[in-house]
Amino acid sequence: MHLDSLQKSSSGERETIGIINGQQVKFTYNVQSHGKLLWHVVDKQEESALHSGKVIAVIKGDGFNEAKLQVSEPVCDGDPYYTIFYMGTAQSPSGDRDSKFWFNSTKASGLPTAFLDKHLVPACPAHFSPGRSQDKMLKVHVIISTLSGTGLAQAFFEDLVEPTLSAFGLSRKAYQVHETQSDQSVTELTRSVFLPCANKGTAQTILLLSGDGGMVDMINALLSTRTSTDYIKPTVGLLALGTGNALAYSINPPQDSTFGLANVVRGTPHPLPTFSVRFSPGSVQLFDESRRSESVPRAHMGDDDAGVMYGAVVCSWALHASLVADSDTSEYRKYGTERFQKVAKELLSPSDGSPTHKYKGKVSLIKRTSGGKAVWESLDGREHMYILATLVSNLEKVLTISPSTKPLDGQLRLVHFRPMLGDEAMRILGKAYKGGLHVEEDAVGYEDIDGLLINFEEDDSRWRRVCVDGKIIRVNQGGWVEMRREPRDVVDVIAAC
Image (cartoon, rainbow, N blue to C red; front, top):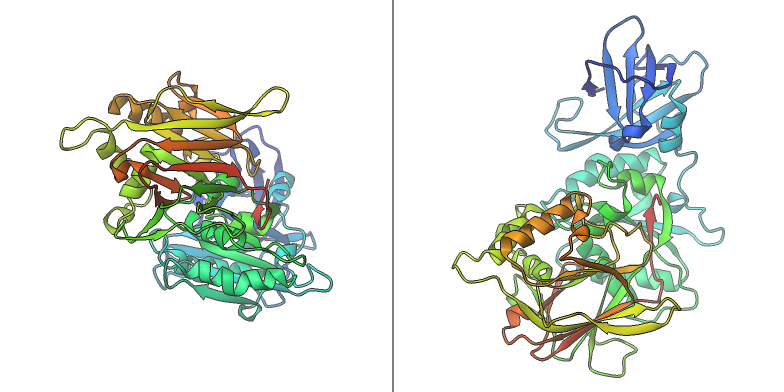
C-alpha cells in the first residue's frame, strides 16, 4: 500500500490488535481529528496511516462482487476480515502509468470499532440495487461532464468510479454512461431519458460527474414541465468535478478527499431543496462568454410573460454575480476556483483607477414574524455591494458563505452589505474562508428569508447581471427579479446527513 509514514504514534486512543498486509499490527484510530487509521507492525518501529478522508468504504469479507478483487491478502486466522476501499493520488500503485487518481483496496482484521462505525457499508446501497423497488427495475446512469472544471471527469470515472461500482456488484453492462457533448447535453438527457422514465414510475440513480451547472440543468428540465401521477424522483449522486461545486461541498463532510464518491456509496437519498427565480420580460440568459443570449424560458404554468429559472445553490446580484460572470472565460477557467479571487480584485480595485462600482436598486425581503406571518421588508438604501441568497453553506470547499446552514435544511439565507472600500470588502470576504466569520462583521447582514425581490436602477447592463447557480442572466433595463422557495419536490440527492 502507498500510505503515509509517520514518526510518532498518537496517544490516548484505544488500541486493537489485527492484521493488515499479512502482518500482525497494532491499530489506533483518532476519530476526534476527523479520523486517521494508524498502525505499526508488532515488534517493529514502523508506523503507517490511512487518512479517513481517502476511504471510500469498508465492507465485510470480499463484498458484493463475485469477481475476485485485486487486494492485499492478510492471514486472518479465522477472525472476521474486512476490505477497505480507498483513493490514492499521483502515480498508480503499479507504476505502469501516470494517473491523478487510483483505486486500491486491502484486507484487514481487528479494525477499531470507531473506524468501522464510520466507514462500514453493511449491504449494497439501495440506490445501486436492482431490487430497490419490488415491481420496478432500477436504472443506473453515469454522466461524465467532459467540459467541467479542469477536465478530470473522464479520468475520475475510469480510475475510481468504474472500479467502485464493480466492487459493489455493478458490472459495466449494469449502467449506462453518457458523455456530454455541449452545455445543453444534461438538459437534453433529462428531457429525453430521465424525465420520461420518471413519469413512467421507473426508479433511477444518476451519478453526475460535474459541477453545479449539471445539477441546475437537470433541476430546470424536471421543474419546467408537469409530472405524472406515477412520477418517481430520480436519485442523484454528486461528484465534485466542476469549477463550481458548492452543492457537493455543502453536503459532503469537509474532510472528504474522494470528490464525494464516499458519500455516494455510504449516503442515502434525501429531498433536494430548490428555489424558483422569476425575471421581468426581456431578461436573457448569457452563453459563450456573453457573446450569445437567449430569452429566459417562461414558466409552463405561468399566466404572464415573466421568465423563470430554478436552482439549488445561490441567487445573487452585485459583486458575486459580477465576478462569476466576468470569470466565466476560457482564460480564467484554467485557474479553477482561484479565478474568482483574481476577478474580485479587479472588480474591487479596477486597474483603470476608477472607483469600485456601487450597485443601484431597491432590495425587498420576505421575512417571517414571530407569529409565522410572511411580511415584506426593504433593505436600507438604494446602493449595494453584495446581495446573495443561498440554500447551501459552502461556495467552495473552504469558503463558508452561510455558516448557519445545515445540509439540505431548506432554509433560504441572505448575506448582504453596502458599498465600502475595495480593501475592506476583500478583508470581510476573506473571513468567509475562516469558517464563515464574515457574518460576524457589523457591516454584514445575515438573515433567514422566505423570498427576495430586486428592482434594478442601473442603466449599464453590466451591472444588471444575476447569477443563478452559476448561470448568468442579464435583466432588462428597469426590470426586476424575484426569488422564492420552490414547493415542488422532484429529485433526491445522496447525502450522509
